[in-house]
Length: 185
Image (cartoon, rainbow, N blue to C red):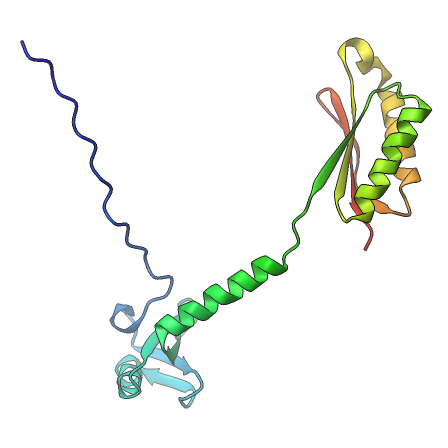
């Protein structure tokens, strides 16, 4: 008796990305379009007239806003248009700041030396532009000291007032009481 053979895994075919915009013949179900662009007189044209103008200039008719009535189209070189969009996205990504969150952990009965040590670190983190997540971790029965944890975090926020602002007030989540601080600009 022969054992059943496992089917061979199929190689995935080439995935074809769908264009984010409808271009030329893919613009369907539209009688009129609003034409905008550099090398065309702006206005409302019939779809066939807009296609004729695009063909004369050897460019593409690209639907920019499909939800508008009538849809907004532009006569441009589509590949150049995609390249410009990618370049803008890349620039925006480079400009966006990466948010770094540094954590500082306390116990409910943290003594002054440890507190001051952690306070200095928090000041450095806020000066360099990082957010600070300070939390009091309650182990076992120490959860009965919730008030001490809240007072500790309130004191911590008050001591860091000139370096950062409180984003989220002390909040108990499970066995942690958490406080978020953001750097002042």
